[in-house]
Image 1: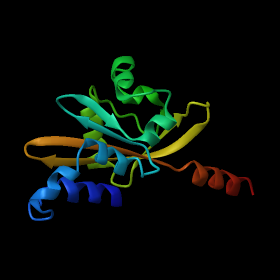
Image 2 (image 1 turned 120 degrees about the horizontal axis):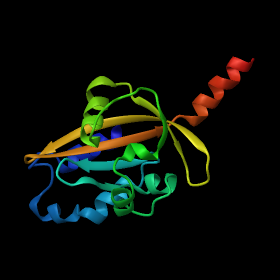
Image 3 (image 1 turned 30 degrees about the vertical axis):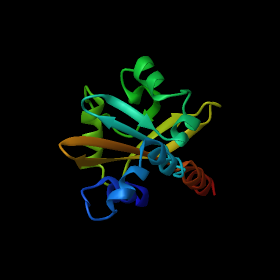
Length: 157
């Protein structure tokens, strides 16, 4: 979760971290360049606007070109998942993100099919970043497919 800490440090309430003239360096374009360095899919959600953005790794994984396609084609991000480890009955994605954040500190298991049809075993974590009265949720999907494949091979032996 080093990237999350970096984001919180940059955008958190640290008024003395940067000099005034450097505040304008960290704009939306820079923010996405930083997020695109993470190999794990990251998706951002607010209660007011729903899903508002994602990094390159997310769009490389799912059959979507941009966040607007997610918002227009799916009532919930959970429609992209083939399987979830638990049956969590929530009406809204915010409730699901809160459930993961509060009840699954080690992550929440799910599978997702990539654009080529390959199934990936993922661990989802949710973090809440609060700033200036706004709540930003960060959904991080860590691919554990290689670990799952190794465990299956060990069972065979």
